[in-house]
Amino acid sequence: MIDYIKLASAKSKGKRPYFHDDPAVERVLNITMAVAGELAVMRERMDSMERLLEKKGLVTRQEIENFVPENEEQETQRQEWHSEYISRILRIVQQEQEELENPDKDLEEIANDINEM
Amino acid sequence: MAKNLPPVWNKMAKHAMLPETRHDERARYNFLSNLNKHLAHVSQGNKVAFEKRVEPAFEKEHGRPIKDRHELKEAISKDAHYQIWSSLRRCTMEMRQQAGRSMVLRQAEELAEKARKLNEGKSTLILNPDVEVPAYLMAVDNHLMPGSYHTELIEGDVTAAANYDSGVFVTTAGLLGKYNDGGGKAITSWLKKNHPEFQPKRILDIGCGMGHNVLPIARAYPDAEIIAIDTGAPMLRYAHARAMDLGIHNVTWIQADSANTEFEDESFDWIQSTMFLHETGGKSIYKIMQEIYRMLKPGGLTLHIEQPQYTEDMSLFEKFIRDWDAYYNSEPYWSKMHDIDPVQLMVASGFRKEDFMQIGAKAENDLVADGDNAEEPEDYGRSPIWNVFGAFKR
Picture 1: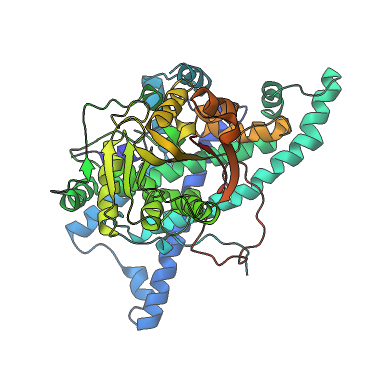
Picture 2: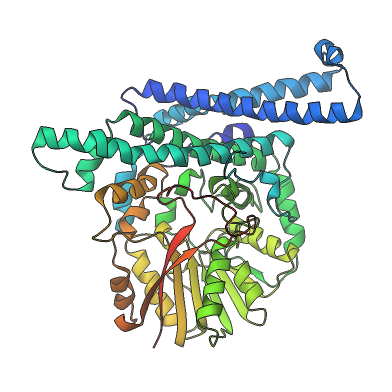
């Protein structure tokens, strides 16, 4: 079976460009934007839940406060979610490591190569 | 109410090959559509920064204006607004790939199985593992799509196409319509309106990808025999299965290299490409055009939907900002191709100069009624407003 979590965050061909004077700025920006994205995702999910719960009159806020996983399957699902979540927000670190392991041409050079193809 | 909000992802038309999406996966795409839209506005600041501080600072230092795109790039690269827009845009494109891939790769086996069932026993899908992926495609992952169009992670893989199909709606913020087919629809409408006498019997679509732009052509000319070619097997498997599910049966999908097909001389009435040529290479583009000329019947038509060519009267800044995608969204041939004179390209391949034609086209979007949208800023190279060039073979 393929490691879909790692593959999903893989870098594309070509040396990654950096736009800020210090690449560290860009690294942190990418992580921050991914977290911002996930916060938006969570907000959308909460919005769905609150609307559904409200519509059906099913669950109280206190029940949500007190909830913990009720069996091993639920525990595994939660941990798997965290694992994928972290891989997603630390994508740039994985990609820098991939580039360190496999140094790549920059796109100017590839453009010139391709122009000869 | 906020203006011009992008459509939510679930407005995309459903078909059997579209990946299963979970709540958070759709939400992730919704976030990214909005982020893309937002960055189109941030992009407007680049022109302001260029005119107000980059250009004056350069002239003050050198005592002369910026003379070429290279100098402009050097100068603007130090500008804080350009830096933050660039890094955010790069980040957004990478996040879009990550979001699409995490969704399709987790269901790679299921998607391959769906395609297998829809494709089984059909004569309209012809794969040929001996077809080599052209060197220009092996050299780069176009638009930061890891593994490009051809990589197969499992047997019968279609994930590259499923990722493309589900994600192009996000990158374009839904402007291509609910089937992402606004380009194919635009060219079909133009042809029917301007050349109603032209009734093609045999049509070839080159670099068809997942087939989104050839299906409107197949619908518009239901009695025509249509052939769509691509070198990526994952794209063709998905395209064929998608077309089957959408009830379109007059397209034959063939794995073939457009620079070197096995089709007979003078065997097509119309040869079309849509957003394809800028993903080829400097020598291949001439071979492809020569091949097109060879395959076209006398009186036949070829058309190519592309981004605008760079012309003398286009400002240095506009050329530079249009070049951004070439280097930073990994479409390296984009910039070089747009420096080619399309007249010269066509004439070198056998077409007559006086038969050359060039028109503008805008995506037909079935998600919004005409006039519903307020004006949007020009987001160079990222708006669905294109240049179409081509010629009748006389």
